Length: 251
Ligand code: PGA
Image (cartoon, rainbow, N blue to C red; front, side):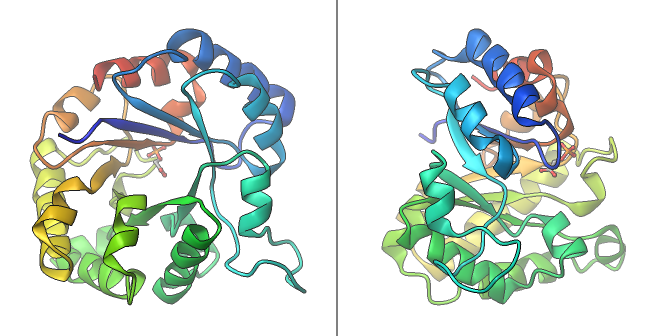
């Protein structure tokens, strides 16, 4: 039995002060909610403030990205250790906005996954096809390539530290959610890929989140599917009440 997992990706929103306010409200609402694992991912500069605000609760903290090197001449980048030191347990890798606007490749995602694990962080690895790729019926091919290259030479024992988020790019921030069936179809394909690449046992334990316009109104249908174990929530994670409802509706 996989425990439901709801993660909020705040993207480039919320100053430290605003983040403390939002995190505080979420803590008030679901800080002791045991049925669902809850994560918030504020921007780097708001991590400390948000972390402080959810202290002594069950809510975990994560970063939205990081570099794979531990230190060096990489202007503007943040290392795994810096992320860890900021109080993070999780880190997102390969979000489609990173892939699209910052040309992040599967090979870089692979390095980030490995660096995160070495630093003691738990990666949430995002994959998913664009609208064009889906229209060309290439969604499986694209996702398979992201998995194959993203997880290249990753040992089986590390899989237990990983969460995978399937986020069809055409559903992110557009209000267009994949239907429960569409999402489940891809999730079962992804789980099957892990079964073949690793083992049934490992694949069965892996949590697969759906992401893309998840709202209080559609989470129940999504999470009712066999292979959907939670959600990576963008827009709706910026409103304490919506995020709370998504968490409660996932239990
Ligand atoms: P959205 O974003 O919920 O606003 O569509 C999801 C994501 O990008 O993780």
